[in-house]
Image (cartoon, rainbow, N blue to C red; front, side):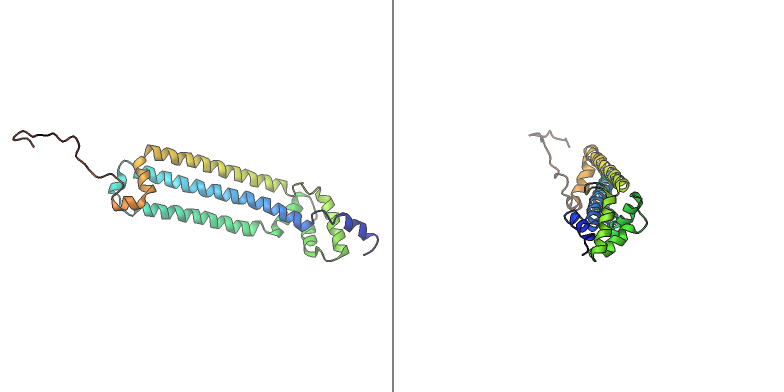
Length: 215
């Protein structure tokens, strides 16, 4: 290693490299995206269950087909699975190392492909290490956000999803209180199917005697 390259490489040896910093940014964006997906799933599931409880309330679950509560749960699970599948595909396609590096280049006003080129040749030798060190000096301290605009957008999406999930849970609790029998049918589909959801009929306060001719 030449005398010119050695001090630069040694100075940045202890600091996180370009790949490590991009990986850290990806982890933050991934955590925010997962939070948004979970919030969206909670929102969808809660709203569907709340609507089902209201639809089956006031004894309507008694005259409805017995399979309706099971169909409701299948619909809820299918909707949540579809939403999570879309979120998983988005994570795979939009949060790859190359995609995040492209966002960093754009937000840090780097030359197109500058960071991706450094990632490709990282660890290849002194020249690659010097190029990486020069690039890292332009990215700022290790604690600085590399893609602040993208991270802020991800934070907003996560906050909206969590807020929507909280409101949907409140709506679900309200529907369960307003339509207690409908929610009971949704929450206990097996008991609704078997007819054991309601207590058995019983005759109370039977008079000790009956006059002749009375019913």
